[in-house]
Image (cartoon, one colour):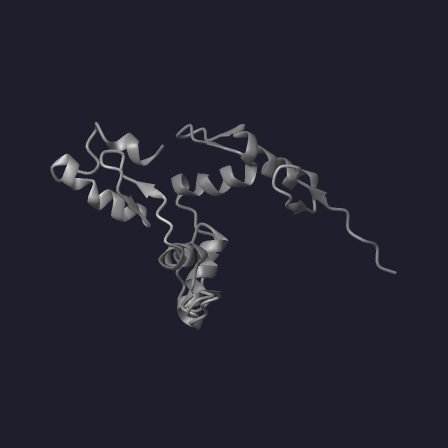
Length: 158
């Protein structure tokens, strides 16, 4: 006889979680609460596991190794994406033309070609772009060649 696993649903976004602790971490994303602080650099995180993964940036620990080539990674998700270079797997496909990607974020950027979405707007002239990198390159016309000048760096990360 199978018993139905109890799940916990977030009232904010509707996602379901197997454990209360996973729900708590998700809820902190909505509230902005980040109670876990890195003792080395002071960066804060919403979940203990996120802090543990971050800590590897300081220690250089890379526990996830590719069995094919031996390259090691700090995060399992990065290893999974890397393994696709060996398998050729591209699980993220564009519904319009079938173009495939190894990761979700390039698919989202690609889909902006079809939707016309341009979420990155220049704070100086109002011109909008589909990619953040294109906005940064564009911004050089306003900064005299240095898009990351001290006066302008905050405009990109608000």
